[in-house]
Image (cartoon, rainbow, N blue to C red; front, top):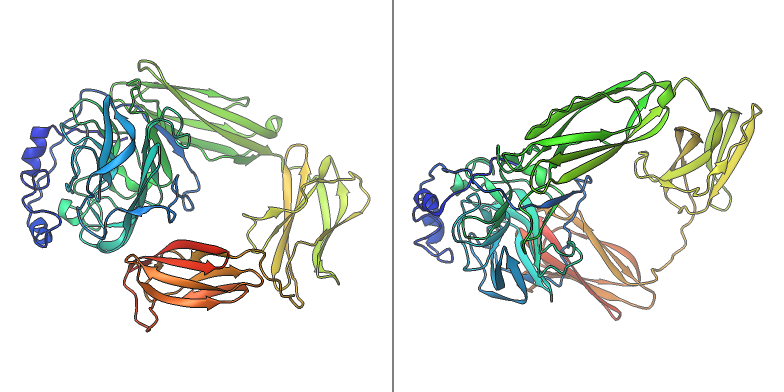
Length: 580
C-alpha cells in the first residue's frame, strides 16, 4: 500500500499535544467545536515500522459503481449515535469473545471517526499510522467523520459477530459534498460470511473524502492521511492496509506513498487477528481487463503491477499461457512488467492467461490473476444476413425474423432483448441455440417472444456463433401497443426509493404494491420517530412521488429518513437519505 509509517506514543503526544489524545474539552460539550477550530495543525512526523504488518486478504468487486456492503443496512440495525462530531458510544457488551493478536475482549466502543476501540471511547480526529502504544483499535477508515451535516453510524450485534456501518458520512466541518460509506465486521472467528478462521472484515461502498478541515484538509483531501488498519496497542502487533489523503485509484502498498481513496471503492478485506503468519501475500495493483478481444494482426500491450506489502521483500511472477506473449520479469518490491502480444491466425479462439506472483517471505505466499484473450478472424464471414426484423403480432407478441443468404461453419444463432438501445444488460431469450443450416441457399428463421408487455419498447440483437467466435447484428426495435389489462400484484411489498440518496428540493419515487383485497398506509418518519407525512394506498401498483416536504408543505432538513408500508399482511421499513 503506501508508506506505512508508524507513530510512537511519544511522537504522537508531541504531535498532538492536548489536541485529541488528551482533549481538554469534551466532544459532547457546546464549547467543543470552537475549541477544535483553534487547535494548531502540526505536520505529522511518522516513523517507518521495523516489524512487518500482519497479513490481510482482499476481494475486488469490479462493479465499482454498483457495489454494496458485505452486510447491507436493514431495519434490524441500531442507531449508534445521534448526529455529532468526534463522539463515541458508551461501553457495548459483546455476546462473544474477540481476540486481537492474543488479547481477548468482550466489550467495545464505537467511535464516530471510523473506528472501534476496546479500552475507552476515542474522540481523536487526526489519525496516525500503526502500530502505536495504547488505543487497541479496528479502523476501517480512521478519519475526521462529521455526521452533523449528513450520514449515520449504525451497529448490529449477533451471537458471534458485531457489524458497524458508517453510512454516507461527511467530514469536518459538517461538509456534505463528498460522502463515505464503509463497514466493519468482527467476530469470534466462526462467521462463514467472512470466512471461517477470519475474525475481522472491512467492506467499502463509495469512498470520496479523506481529511477534515481541522486535520489540515482542503475540500476533503490533504493534511493528515486517513488510516485503514488494525492496532493491538503494544506498538508491535498491527495490520495496516494504507494511508489515504487524495482522490484517485493509485495504490502502492502500506509502506510507500499515500494512496487514492477511490481505490477503496467496493473493496473487501478480511483478517485473522487470532494469530497468523507475519507474511502478507503480494497484491495486484494494475491488471489487464478480461476479456481482451483482438482481431488477427492486431497488437496489444499492458503494464502489470504487483507489490509486496513488506518493504524488504521481492516479488517474482510466472505467466501461464498457450500463445506467444512477450514479457520480461525482474523480481522487485514493486514489480512492473509489460505483456505484449500480436494476434495471429493460428491463435483464433479463446486463451486463458494466468499470472502468479510469489514473494520471498517466510513462508512464501502467492497471489494470482486470470484473464482471457480472444482472437477473432475478420477475413471470413460465417454468415451473410439479408434481413432482420421485429414486428408485433395480432396476439400482442413480438415476431423476430431473419434471413441468411449463406452460412459457413456456423454453429447457430442466439437472440437477445433489452428495453434500451444498449446491448449491455440485454437478456438471452433463446437459451437453446437455434441450429444453423450451413448452406449457400437462402434460409429464413423466426422466433416468437411472448414475454413482452403492452406499452413497452423493445430492442433485439441476433448473435451468430461459429466454432471460434461470434458476430452480433442489430438492434431492431418494436413498440408493443394495445390495451393493458389491469392486474393486481400477488403480494403486498415495499420497493426501493429511487433516486436514493436524493438532494433537497428534488423528488424521490417510492414504489408500492398492494395485493387484491388489501389497502395500506405509507408513512415517512425521521430519526426521532416523528411522522413527516403519510399516504393511503389501495390495491394495485403505485409510485409515490415524494418531494422531501412534510404534511404542511415545509421542506425537510437533510439526513436519514425512514419509509414504512403497513398492510394487514405486511409491515416493512426502508431507509432513504436527503442530501443538502
